[in-house]
Image (tube, rainbow, N blue to C red; front, side, top):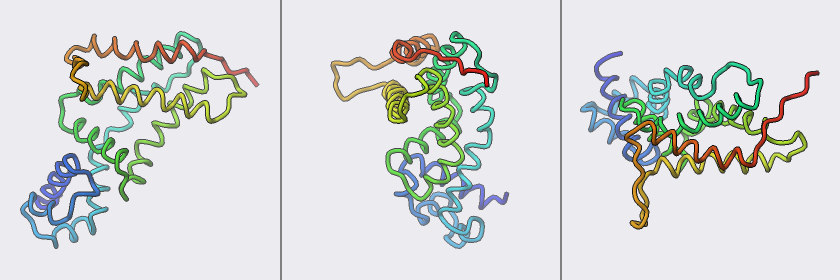
Length: 211
């Protein structure tokens, strides 16, 4: 990768983190990277090409992270299933707390696209959101009766994710609510167990019948 293409990629990552893909222009990327517009066209063809390169870079270790969130070992008992739910919530909250810049930019890009989807959303969905969604839905279905409607699955998916997002927010406009302290992993585990408790109170593991 040439120095120009590296500069463009670095500038795009920073700007997409600050403003989102939709609100960032090619000229802004070029200004920060100190290159001309022709350099973007030469190395990446278009703004979307830059966006794809950003996703490829930020998610190059995705398989490792997916194994952390969703271990591949089969679930055989209620205890294993409950632990998977708790561990998923814990790691989901903790992801934003990682100190490396790549994790920070990755998190910012995900939530930016969830808040204001752009033409980059479909690319991000294929790489990250769809596998993530599919696996969590699998966990949820293990806790619902076979006859449960899909709407029930959707409600539980939204319940888990929305609570995780609110806990990740940490601070609230209402000053009567104190900020949450995520500086210690023990606190993150406590918050995760609290969220999991509300889920596991209603969902109960149901082992699949052998065919």
